[in-house]
Image 1 (cartoon, each protein chain N blue to C red):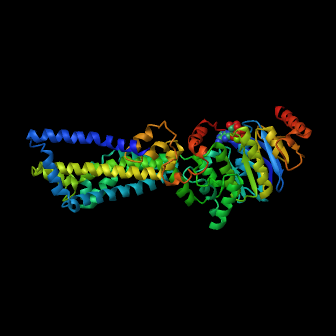
Image 2: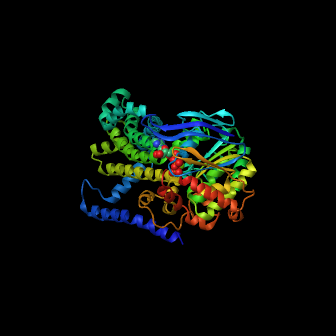
Image 3: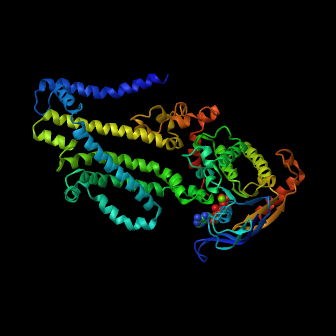
Length: 250
Length: 318
Ligand SMILES: Nc1ncnc2c1ncn2[C@@H]1O[C@H](COP(=O)(O)OP(=O)(O)OP(=O)(O)O)[C@@H](O)[C@H]1O
Ligand SMILES: [Mg+2]
């Protein structure tokens, strides 16, 4: 569970600085899938950095699983926007995924099976001994996702995770993520630019306007399990899409 | 298929040295010069002197001084370099001193080292360490400062303890620069080894050369010079082998693995800079860790190694 109330983040000083997040409040329920839509530069990454405890909030409160955030929370994993830079090129795929697990208190055996599990889940079970730089961009992104999954987080933050892959890979990854979300029962906060992606994935879509303030909330009542063809053909899908499109424009 | 060009390259590398030796041999045989004794005489003196009579007397002391001084410099340079690289304040504090000491040629301190440590091994080790520590230190600092902030953020968000961050992220990330510094230092170390042994010494290669010259034993002097040349050659070769092994991920990440995997010999350094154009042979006969993946999906393995680096550099950072 994730509760954000009156979050504010200013880079630099309050008077002269750059207000990246103005006044942001929302709640993501247990095992809910919430997407955040917003144009470039509206403060989405900054918001996630505050939620993940990497950047201190200027004011406001963030609760993860009921605990106030004043550093990276225990049960949270964060998939970065610039995923390829967050992988370590001197470690194999397997090692990249298992590296954080020992420090979480998993035994060697547990870490091993969690790693194998997560890599299987993202379809990289046969590339465990490869190095990140031997993989395509989409595969690297899947490694970063597998690393987050193997960590067994209760809250998963994802920052435009599919922005740099082709359309086909993208829809494959979306379906993969939905499957994982159901299987691992995690709370997901997913940031994207893409309206279709947000509607397709989410229980709820929040639209942010610079400086990161919620302007629209859309409940998505599309039936699950969702399907790239039939779900996107539903009239409700089209209605949500145009609602969000106009919300983003105004 | 691959062995034929390999043997060819190997022979090619022998061509010039062989020609030079032959040329000198022919010329010196009839020159009757005191300073340039015939090749055959140098050869026989070499066999008498260095197989293996003077090996424990002069070669081993030299090599162990070099190893001790250089090893000390690596330990101190990397440790201090990481500390200075991580802390801006420490860097600012240390900078004037570092810049001053670095500008000081190590041989200028030989008299002082002799006062401090006497004429034995320690003064030589001190001079070698003092002269070789700077490239390692400065490169380590740069390497640490060039760290991807995203990798550190990742480590923080997964709550990885700082000791492990140091060992598994900072050190490997800085290792390409550390190795660059160590390579420069290795040549400096050999120079200082010789110079320090030419001043107030009782053994060592530098001492041997100087003594031979003073005793007008010109062929002996030449054999000493040859031994130093060979020593430098072998050490550099060993260094490149180790570097290629430790940093193979770095070459791979930069899309350079093809050439270096095909020729991980002494010419690995020039090829690394030359940015090989043939990416075809990439993982086919790479060192063990890479070869293990070659059985994966063929097309991916064959074509992808360039993808991440280009994808990375062209990605807008937002
Ligand atoms: N480290 C920083 N220092 C100062 N200003 C920053 C910093 N990081 C971001 N900003 C500013 O904060 C604002 C929001 O940036 P942020 O990266 O959060 O946007 P974003 O919504 O994630 O954009 P994108 O969709 O392009 O990733 C921008 O105006 C940006 O210039
Ligand atoms: Mg962003």
